[in-house]
Amino acid sequence: MFETVEPAPPDKILSLIGLFRDDPRPGKIDLGIGVYRDAQGRTPIMRAVREAERRLYDSEQTKSYLGPGGDPAYCEAVTDVVFGNASPRERICAVQTPGGAGALRILAGLIARVRPDATVWIPDVTWVNHASILADAGLASREYVYYDPVANGVRLDAMLSSLRGAAPGDVVLLHGCCHNPTGASLANADWDEVCELLLARGLVPFVDLAYQGFGDGLDEDAYAVRLFAQRLPEMLLATSNCKNFGIYRERTGCAFVMAGTGTQAANVLGHLLTCARVAYSMPPDHGASIVRIVLGDPALRADWRSELDSMRTRIAGLRVALAAALAARTGSDRYDFLVRHRGMFSLIGVTPAQAERLRGEHGVYVVSDGRINVAGLTEAQIEPFVAALTALR
Ligand code: LMR
Image (cartoon, rainbow, N blue to C red; front, side):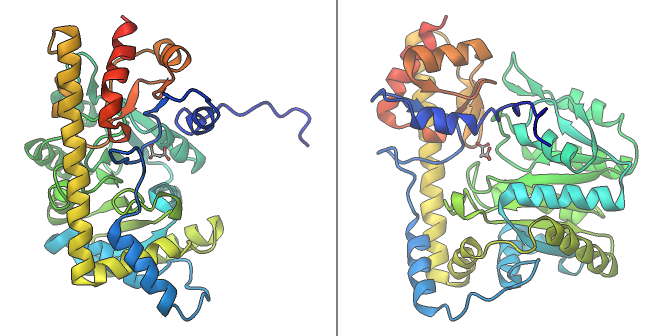
């Protein structure tokens, strides 16, 4: 069976985990996978999460099965965080998933069941796993224009005109906030234009909201989702709590579908449950329990929000400090885009060969497409990183 199996191509992001771990150099810098780190370089367990785990340990009575949709109370609590008051609850169904990637895969499976001929339009630069997930579900994908590598921003007009080429009923994958990997994200006025185009062309948004709370704030980062919920008949939405609760390895996410009517939503839910059942039967519970406990307790919820706000503010500060250090070193403003970008990531404009040199010569780990995880930098690492980056030129 396996005699002719060739090695699988390595994942650009995940392959860095092992390489970094095995690198003996003390000054090595990890700007690869998207995790938040504090000034000491640790990925902290948030205070509210720690307390929720304590309460869970003391109060949990059983670990019996919950079913393929996970915990409905978790889904309800997340609906509130994501949709706020904009939720047309009767038209929404949700299932808990193993992380945001699990939600994306379940929703891709749903599309394959109900609209197998749809083309899924993805940004011309996107998270490395998007195209693979869609292909794995048997879906055809095409790229729309998104990123301008010269201006380090979004090419909104070109994006809109490429989406005008989509057929009614096609699906458009959009990063709800904090674009991964570019960092170049849409402003509210841009989302308004995208929304009107989706409505006019009969296109279905498939929103990936993995970084809510890391851009401009928890509610601000939900602008697109809430707009779509009010203006559009249908939406697919994959959310993650792995990042905004710092519970990465607990794999905690949610797949939402907004359908035209409550009856349609109930029918869709059955298919989502089937997609989950055939893939992994039921999602893991620990992360969802943490989120449910935190969101259900006003004091814990407020503390979580405030800690998340301070993480976001810290990332924004790192962006300013990094841009300033690069400006001082290069004598130019060419890296000022770092301050305009939102979320954990930015494309720093290095080639795969240069990314390889950063790693080999300086112990600086960036993704081969030039993505850096700004949220992974410590203040003390800014100068060594800037020195390594500018030494490439
Ligand atoms: C990332 O983009 O670094 C994260 O979403 C982790 C992953 O699974 O790639």
